[in-house]
Length: 139
Ligand SMILES: Cc1cc2nc3c(=O)[nH]c(=O)nc-3n(C[C@H](O)[C@H](O)[C@H](O)COP(=O)(O)O)c2cc1C
Image (tube, rainbow, N blue to C red; front, side, top):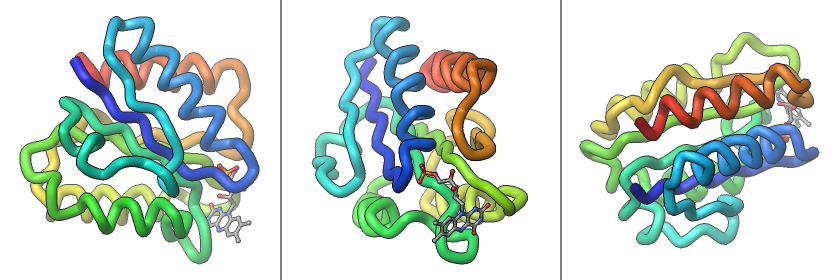
């Protein structure tokens, strides 16, 4: 099982989620491509069995810029791919993840599970939730 965990993070909150997700994927025995959206290899990512993408809510409920660029670059290659999304937010109600999920549906992606959001910095319980989410996503 090959899994890609690709994220963007401006202050480390989504990065902390990604680290927990990476850890859980590796603990499940998956081979993981782990990295940030600004340097990820699009072809290698879309060749994975499961793709887990993280971005904080930015602007007005939109993806962080480097993830927007990366995601736009792979959006046309996601038909039939299992994809999960996650990220940190502050004052919103998750609109950026609902919009991202709609884009995934339109791209023909298969959901790897409900989008996972954490308010600001992940606490210990949130880290555990990230790990459980990842384990379920790659089953
Ligand atoms: C410029 C800017 C725009 C933001 N826009 C939103 C937003 O639209 N909705 C929201 O819930 N949080 C918003 N936030 C809060 C961030 O999503 C939140 O601080 C998050 O924890 C950052 O995660 P990161 O450390 O992974 O970048 C914004 C923060 C900044 C700095």
